[in-house]
Image 1 (cartoon, helix red, strand yellow):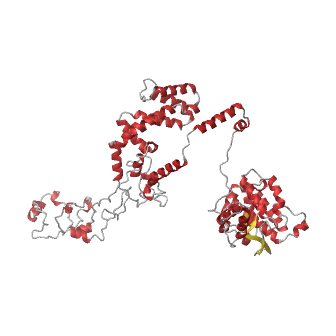
Image 2 (cartoon, one colour):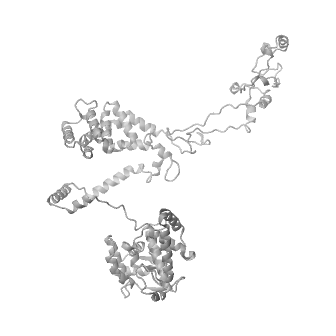
Image 3 (spheres, one colour):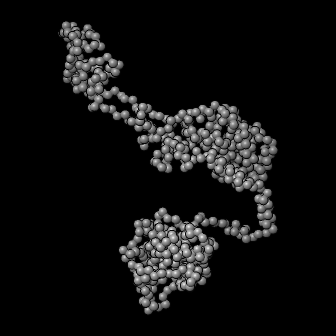
Length: 603
């Protein structure tokens, strides 16, 4: 068969690959044998050709069980599925479900041509070849060879990327279509002559299309499918490193032996103890993982909903941290200092104990380690002058042996920025252990930490209803905005002029400003509600007496009593309730209000 004729070329022309692919290829060659040891091919009628030979999932699973003494059907199906997903066999119908081989006859499969096997030098799946393949299919019958939506989208992107090679892609595609129609275009082996190409059957053309489509289904799978041929990041070496690897002398072997001896001397814990520690760690941190415990994602899970309040509540620096965050600081000292909020709280605690120089030294050494290379030398000198030199303003408490080690490393590595990053490691480790064993337990027992726990526990957190809000402030229960007094119109004042009341709300008087031009246009009519013509809460003024007003008006027309000044009119509670349907006021929430207007304390 074709597989046997091309196997020699595959072995000579293959790229560097894993040994598992060589085993797969030997397995496919054994399956494709025409004698009794191979899989028996059955002829099946096809819509686009006369006859196609294929085999079912039962055939390949039975062969694997018989050849390799596999008793479990699932294991044999898994092995056959790997052969299909890596492109050594392919389903004729190209359904996604058919790429998982099952022990039934629901799908038919064929062997892939060796030219399309993985890791062939002349069978690379680069983007230009994929663009030519898609262009060729778009030029042919769209009913049989039409592009799928994801292929059309990929083709449009490739044309934009290879805009300068668009003519080359079109010419190559047209030439391949012409050769396919003439029967001369073959992958793997070409026809010997034109007469032999003319005698080529239509079935071989259909098989060629199936093989090419199966090849690109493996290397350019549809969205949501596993990319089995996707390689990881490539490892690049410098030429000097490669040359040093090839040149192995006596010293290199001694260094390798010393390294291996040191590795053998390291204590190795039992596997049972390691697993037990992992289980303990998982049980301890499970309540802090929002993927394992839904209560850790309060007030809402941002991976499920679009609410971002979880990220705002767990920002680097907040006014009041969450309860789980504060509780996590009490598990270990590492959890405290790796959290920026916890580091700030711990530094403020050390400030009260007059030992804040320890955490500041540790922070500056960390910044120097992971800072830019150009600032390493200056940072080393600054840290040494402030914390380690004799009479330093912020001298830290370390032993003489550690200080001597730091001084030796500083003199030895002077002028080497890459090595200077780690000269303070002995002093930093000493200060870290000092804070962990001495300052950290006192911090957990301090009033500051206990107050933080209590405040975080009593902090009510609710889901945000509205999408607006700053999000950087404290998360607390918001109250609706207060109702402001509504300004009444002139018509309402006329209608309410005869209404009186003595509730406290009557003291709120709607005021308007008027110009001097319309003072006389105001028609103020006051209907008396009592025999004296006054409201119950009013007293008569001397100027309000009719006889006195007439006597005073006879004089100077510029007198104050001659001007018609607007008066205030109280509004009763009954009238306000009657107008509630027309005078509804909308409670607009504050900018950072996290409670909807219909969510109150009584709900």
